[in-house]
Amino acid sequence: MKTATSQSAQKFTTISGRPIERLYTSSDLAGREYARDIADPGTFPYTRGIHAGGYEHKLWTMRQFAGFGTPEDTNARYKALLAAGGTGLSVAFDLPTLMGRDPDHPLSLGEVGKCGVNVTSLADMETLFLGIDTGAITTSMTINSPAAMIFAMYLVVAEKQGADWTSLSGTIQNDILKEFIAQKEYIFPPRPSMRIIADIFAFCAERVPRWNTISVSGYHIREAGSTALQELAFTLADGLEYVQWGLDSGLPVDRFAPRMSFFFNAHSDFFEEIAKYRAARTLWAHAMRDRFGAKDERSWKLRFHSQTAGVSLTAQQPYNNVVRTALQALSAVLGGTNSLHTNSLDEALALPTAEAATLALRTQQIIAHESGVPAVTDPLGGSYFVETLTREMEDGARDYFRQIDQMGGMVAAIEAGFPQREIAESSYRFQQALEGREKIVVGVNDRTGDAGDSETAMPTLYIDESSGERQLRKLEQLRVSRDAARVARTLDALRESARSTRNLMPPILDCVRAYATVGEMCDALREVWGEYEEVAII
Image (cartoon, rainbow, N blue to C red; front, side):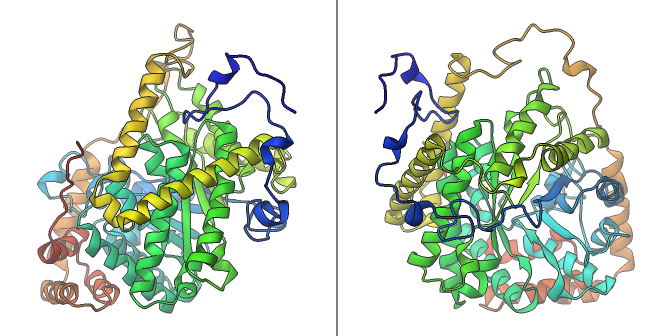
């Protein structure tokens, strides 16, 4: 039996505000059957991991997120990361690219190359991967509204390098629902946006079978201020919505679901994060088997990338961020992540310097080779505390699923503002807890007077306006040198396809091969579908 706890102990909560006890015992797991609810690693419902041997045969992919300035600048950074031992690339795009705007658009002014690399046309993608064998690496690209265009550019680059599309491996984020929920980098309304994603599912099932067609992202939901439970529930609910749209488009579930992947935040509450990952695998396995009738075990197995929490990084005392990131990365590994990005210590101040990015990569390598943690699969399995948290995560997520299903699915819930409102309220509650010192962030609301760790001494990477100027000059040259009539024909064909039910990937590939720009292709679709304007949440 549990012993009585003091009144003060009852006040402890996770970072998400979930009450926690001082002590957990076997009584907290009453009714939980090991074979049914947890099981061994590699066994349904995969709570303890999708691989029986964990990291025995292959460590997680160390995929550092990088991109800034021009494609030439970022190409050099990629080569440095690969030389330092990185095992995969992850492309960060700038705001104009993410919003489907060319560098000469008025809204691109001052933003070109600032928060990621600028990619305007196939010519830029060719430069971005110059000297990098696309057939020999895995590449992840964080792009959503213009995902089809950027993916088509990557495919054509691989084609020009002589790589076979059927052997290409990587991921496009392509998760528009979390844009409507959290990050707000959307272009088209929700329903035509979902049509593009279903088209990508069908195209890749036929032509690029090893490519992960979507990375359903909870990361940005968490960065917007959600709790761990909301991140889990809304991310998986997004995933369920994508599956339903794939089915409604006529695709058998096992034809596309095995190439869906997920992307979670590795936040600061160590045990809560581990429980979140374990619950995610269980919930997805049951949904795919029992709700959608998937027969292929690959459809049941949730694969996920994780990234340490950017929102947890502080400009105050930035060297503290090294410790935060190490603990967050360790929680992701203990939770069974399949790939991982570790944030750099200077990211609250600017894009990472090469030195800071290398140190972040070294953090993963030290966990992999010096901690001993990867030697055991799910080493915290069986912990009364972790198993209880996992069960509570599962139960809480199912409650959210029921609410969203009653609204008619995630698109309808987003149109009603439900997940946006839930996240806003959670973010507000956390800020109150921070200002009231109920939650402590060292260097921000505690230990703020310590000397010798000031952000003023931190070297940072500065992206000036020269990147934008270089991209503008290249765009001008491109428009003079390409076949303008061919570009016009391919854009007209794209508009016509958007008005029909034909798959959009073939006409987008034609546009890309003609060196149409991201902005031109997105504008063609804007003419047909319009742009989305979010309804205010009251």
